[in-house]
Length: 192
Image (cartoon, rainbow, N blue to C red; front, side):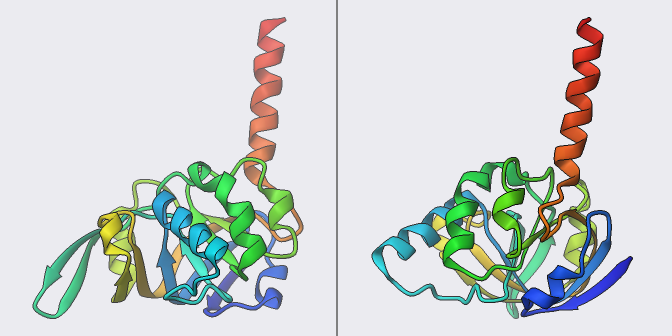
């Protein structure tokens, strides 16, 4: 199935998605990598308010390359980064915030059960940084630029951002986990 979703997202929007479905996102997307995840969790611990909302949010694991112009920021490159690095922090993030979609590449180990009934993981093909930059209509703002360009939280307006493949659905099905299981069986059989 193919779905076109508009942010902010509700649980109902993601519950209909199944592993392997194709998704396009329009609306607001926030980039976040390791340092941004760490800062979000630090602020959660101290009770400080975030400068952006994560309710119904889409987080894109991306460290974009931006160029400052007279009219603001221009996206040069915005491909996905490896999501596995953020797996350990995602559990706490999902418990504290109503993030509905995470976009990245490579899947997130041991996270499918924690996403159940909360969030979905959408895979974006690595190497598509130029395509991604063309689908970003506007850089609305940037938060935490002190973390550096790739680690800052960029608030982007996108139109039909994708194609994205549902890698982990809200029922806990994990296409990456299945691939890992098959690969392990093949390796095990070769050792015999």
